[in-house]
Image 1 (tube, rainbow, N blue to C red):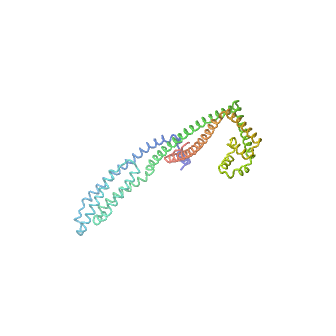
Image 2: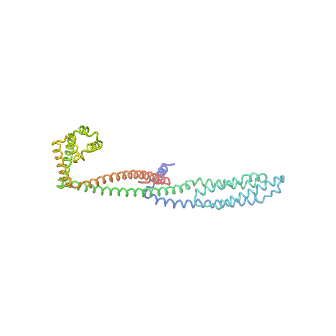
Image 3: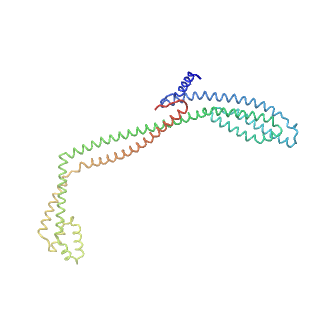
Length: 388
């Protein structure tokens, strides 16, 4: 080999290593081209088989003519043996008839299925013909051996052809698998698109809620600055302060009464004692009643100071009622309730959005995984390099 021959072989090797670069989106179109090429190859595959079956049938017919013309009766063997041989021959001819018909009418559409069905037919033939063959070879070994050699030769040729075209058979399955994965990939892409649309919906609702929150907070802020609100707030403050003062004075008034002395005076009168207990236990509500003044008088412990303090409390209660009448309903309460509602809705939406994010991440992972598997399978078909 000369130096130029070495150079030429090197160039040829480099050309063979060059792969066709295609985008992932072009895979489906490339599969169609591969299918066209595969259809032609499968056509040639089955044309060869058609021709070989035809030759096999012709050869088998020649052998069968000889086999069917064998005169078992003329063989120099016992009569019982002749019967067994004849029975074996007839059964063997039946199994050959089965083989010829099944092979001839075998569907030639899918290579993998054809090979499977072909091997199944031969397995069935072997099962049917084994015992009859053993019986028939007792006296007609040469004739039946010719038939057997014809069958074995045909089977070996077919087996060799199947092996030579193994990749061709697998290629169809690979293409179908890629189509199936592409279909799944498109479904996942659609799922991802739906998730993105749903996510945009969440964003839109959150934006609307946030805008409403800003508006409500601004409205609340304006109310807090208003003269009416500030005046009302001052009245509420005054009311609360006056209520505490009144309660303090009522407590002092209660403490100024000698309840022990009153109990000693009325302890023998159950009815009066019940009244004393009821007034004492509910003093804040009943200290203004005449029943208390009457008890104090009868116990001779009613003092001027007590009446003055009681009168003072009465005046303050009147003032308190006037303040309460002037206090307007809290203008912030409805807004505060709405703010609480907005916060709750935001929390729910954020949680839903987080769930959606996890769902999107899972789908994106599945999409990436599928994309990689599809690319790898496509590269198995031939000289392809998939670009992402």
